[in-house]
Image (cartoon, rainbow, N blue to C red; front, side, top):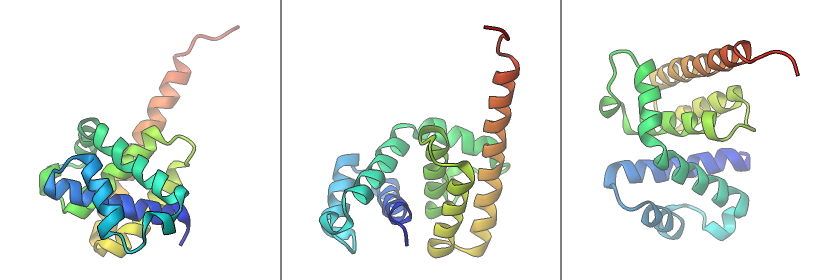
Length: 154
């Protein structure tokens, strides 16, 4: 398993904990690395701990905006009714779509699906794929519209 996948799995577990307990973000992160993770932060290495921590803090900081985007694509599904794992996996992936621009969107979707296969159900992978693919299309259409609307010339 690659470092970034491991970081995403760690981040998902921290987001799950935050979603259930609503503790302070720094407490969730500290508790996770000190007590809950199967590897210590020093064993994980800085690449994993930094990326996981950035995913958690960024996702939580932008949660309202992220939840709105998910809700717009999740016809007849309220965020609160989604399985905790699934909604946090969606949140994390949508955060990456908008705030980790160096990662290709297809890679983000593939990683989310691989993690869903490990932590959720087969049906969840289909649900997650549909929502993320829709948000990806919305993002791409928005970018195309802004390019078309840009003034031409130098």
